[in-house]
Image (cartoon, rainbow, N blue to C red; front, side, top):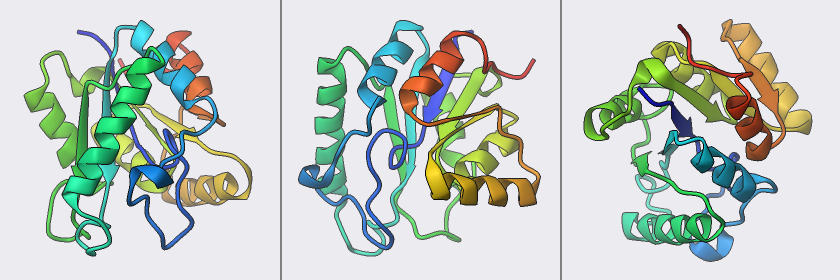
Length: 190
């Protein structure tokens, strides 16, 4: 069984908008430093690469699913041009409480395991920048890679510690996460 890498989008692949704003169109989408190189490196490992992203701005009426699809199409094209790939993208358009897919719930991950040949949750790693990503990884029994820097990273680490959630490694960029995964510093639980 091959490795599956589940990636959050905002804050891992692209720059997050300041709260309470959202990335609503391609013109607002900005790849984070190291993201394209990291995605190319992950593609070279042969792992399945699946984006799992909470997108409640749809339910709030801030942007449409059509706008989100356009962002994802253009994101994928840029990633492929840089030598990377995304095998699938799952997103939760809900605000919460009325679905099983909004992280930290595990519905998007489980759906990927059902729908994508070769995806096995027992052979997966979750890469994210928020507590909900780390909590989803813990619920799945997967190792978690936390991406971030500065004060925000310190805040997330404090919340993760208060919840008693395990983090396998903390890195500044997706490129650093790809190195940790490729070198075996982060591997699925036995």
